[in-house]
Amino acid sequence: MSDLMLACNNVVKDFGGVRALAGVNARVSQGEILGLVGPNGSGKSTLINVITGLHEPTAGRLIFQGRDITADEPHLITQLGIARTYQVPRPFNTMTVLENVMVSATFGHSNLGLDQARVDAREALEFTGLAAYAEAPVGKLNLHQRKFLELARALSTKPQLLLLDEVMAGLNPTEIDQSVAMIRKVYESGVTIVIVEHLMRVVTSLSTRMIILNYGRVIADGQPEQVMRDPEVIIAYLGKDYA
Amino acid sequence: MKKWSAPLWFLAVGILLGLVPWLRTVLGFPIFYLIFLYFIFFWVAQAISWNILTGYSGYFSFGTGAFFGVGVYTMATLIDKYDFNFLSALPIGGILAMLLGLGIGFVVFRLRQLKGELFALLTLAVDFVLAAVVRNTDSIDGGFGVRLGSVQPPAFLGSFSTMMYILSLVIALITVFIAYSIYYSRFGLGLFAIRDDEEVAEGLGVPTFRYKMTVFSISCFLIGVSGALHALQIGYITVEGTFALRVPLFVILMSVLGGRQHWFGPVIGAVVIYTLTDTFSQASIEYLNQIIIGSLLIVMILFLREGIFERLRRRFWPSFGLLLIVLAAQLAFGIGGRLISQTAYAMLITIAFLLISDNGYARLTRSIQFLQAKKQVGVSDV
Image (tube, rainbow over all chains, first blue to last red):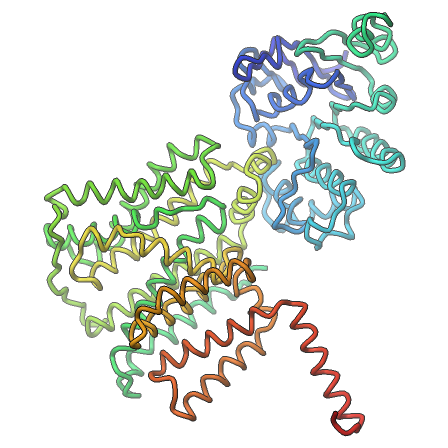
């Protein structure tokens, strides 16, 4: 394995009496696309929320590039190089598309001035194919474009680690192909990616490694082919009869 | 986009308005106009400071009265009990209001759930608590009110009303300039992101806690300074008059009417609302005052939620022309009473014009253009 980028050491997260993450141990290495999958409620989104600092873990440690980020505030974690997209796009509704990306461009990385942020934001819009909508209000974008706006915002923070939370949910096959191509392009530019996805076809083809979560626990970790054959994974997805 | 020449424009406006007290003696305006303009500047400063917090960051404050009250009572206490120079008491009023804001912010802004109506209620509660404290503290008020003796204006500021006019003008200009600068800055962009979705803003790198603290303290400081000056204008200060809901309600009304999303909106709102209230309370229709202002608020919320400023910008010349025509007509026929009332009526008619929806307005201009074209082609009129 190449350089370790992110380590989740025994991460636990409780919401009231519900244990969403029951001691997750996971590692992300530089230069991989890690597929994070699991049935509904298995803790995928919670894990992303914990990594990005939105929720502080109940127990456990998060180490990003040798630095303990467990108790850091989300904006700091973003500036250190972890970006994420939201499953349901959450654009800033009173702003134009360009302004949306300017927020992340100016705050997400190294405290850029607004002029430089504008340049970077345009670049990110160009990359995601939204350049034509730069001056439009966000309300003019459809779901597919909003998902790409999420991606543009995340990219403009110049992340080293990008967490994609179901970027393909709700898209049609053509749009999915577009997204896959785009994710590959991002990956080739040197960004390490963690992708949460329900579409198994997409994850297995994109990922270089997969982690399967169930009931807040890692039940399998390895090459896609190997993981898909794992009896415990088959039970989690299909039930005992198929194992 | 921010213009490099903006400070010069603010300075120019300041100098022009600053000359008014001296022009007044030349032109023979009654002194009443200076006091009227003092109140306009006071409300502009209050409304804009409120909007820097609420319009920009989305934290709806009902507690303007508390910070205003801190300013008022700082001035009252310092000059009445400690013989302070009132000019040095002005910034102290601001600083104390700011410290109160920082204290509240430090507790409140850590809890991300305290947004919307909870934040509004909490700030309102601070206002009530503070009123009770002041009423029961003999060294500040003690329930009997504070009567301020007359202050001696420095020679270069002329008479008392000239001085009040100039000082309130300076405070209002600085406040508006700060609002303008934030609006076009990186700080402003971060605040708007907080307003739209705080969690996402934080996730994209905006230091939300620090930004909220900063904007809250700026807002409180400005409210406090403006309040401290206002203590001199009131003269006789009571707990009931200071911490009452009048100030917060008016400030909210002005910002909603003018428009909260733009830095200039509350200026328009403050000018319009104060001119209207002044008119209706002078005329023998005082009882109509609150009815008219209240109905105006209802109409605004129903038909023009973004405030009049946005539409005024899109239809500037037609609206401005209409205002002037109505004003000139009243002057020509000698109706409408004083100049201020005539202006108020002209404003009401202009607002009615701005209430025409964008679609309706487009249809109107199309018909006018069509009629003009018809005339040019030489078709006799219909």
